[in-house]
Length: 215
Ligand SMILES: [Zn+2]
Image (cartoon, rainbow, N blue to C red; front, side, top):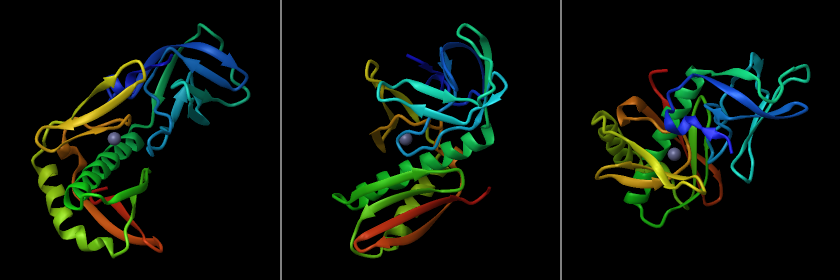
């Protein structure tokens, strides 16, 4: 199984690794820093052995497959350098953790509220809820609490809860411990100032969009 270095150190932007399998355009590597779409967090972009990665795919068996252009010449055993677009990844990490904080505060503020979807992109993250009223009524309270936690620059601990099945969680002392296999920041302060927007996405369905203010 591909060793996922993006969990050991989510701040790595370049990695030397080895090709372990090749099937036409699809290759696998021994270790990886290149995140593949999972848990709502979009895939990284970047290169492998100098070739742009067209698609990163996480399999049911928790392996990661990388699709390269047709003309690639990589073979099993080749040493390759992997690079990711760090500007994109860091925005994904900041927007991901902003969403983690907002979701947790929503649960704490309104126990029983149901999340029905979430997505983390480079420009914004969003969380969808089953909720029959205007969700922005929660914004003043939730926003203030979120920015207080962010300003406090608390450490975020990430670890395995089950190494065999690769289940992971993050933890902020005195705030929450939440299951998630995404790439997480080291401190809450890195999120920076955020902005919340409300969208109605259908009867009884509300969306919170989260933006980074300083970028
Ligand atoms: Zn997460």
